[in-house]
Length: 346
Image (cartoon, rainbow, N blue to C red):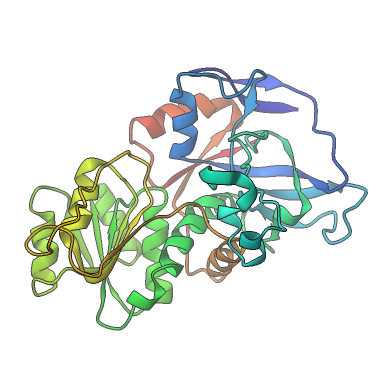
């Protein structure tokens, strides 16, 4: 089969590799679509080899189950599926409590094995995955289901984690309306009675935010926090979801969140929010506010996000590429010229 593989730091190429053989508890998925994420860019730009052998990329996967391992009884051949990306142990206390994304078997890193980030991923014609990692998608198009497997999952997890702040009259700010952020705006619009404020750069991104359901769109800049405070009578937003995570957006989030509000770090830009232990007041960290680094999501988050997509309440804006054009898609994502999500179709 063909697979888009990371062969050396900064080098990806489509290679001919064997179709995966199945372990007893695995299923073989014929890939219908595989989304491209900034995490994939991080891998491409990582200065060291991830492993000795080439790595097939891709953790946003949707396709059809075409074979099952000898111990698999719960997944039928022919099931159209999305792949849950947290391949957790399934038996520890966190997994038993539904927190598979912070599986105890993953130790301090709390990142369970993820396709394309260790095990071979789905930017290929076929991928082998644990049977418990597939979720039925019904008739949802593969090019929609694939981005939901991460962009929907991760957004849903961040939003479900601040549900008690999403009451009528509250304000939720989405910073960065890219691959994840434009899905998050739609999830907020579909599930909560809040005013949605979207922050990004450029008319095209702001237009996308409005089309996705944002009530207010703001051009990101030095006065953005002041604009959010003005919209909220000086108090700040009950929820700030930062899908960028650079210094500027992290510090904007601190300046814009309300007392007792919730700031969630989702983007991986390495930004420092500048939260300090000092008396609250002025532009600094307000009393009672919480901050959390939000990783991936639970299997339930994926099921809920897929349900919204199947109901037509969430639609990922996608640009499709052939597998052979994978490098073009990576370069376009790095240049910031993808509107929504790039999706590879084998």
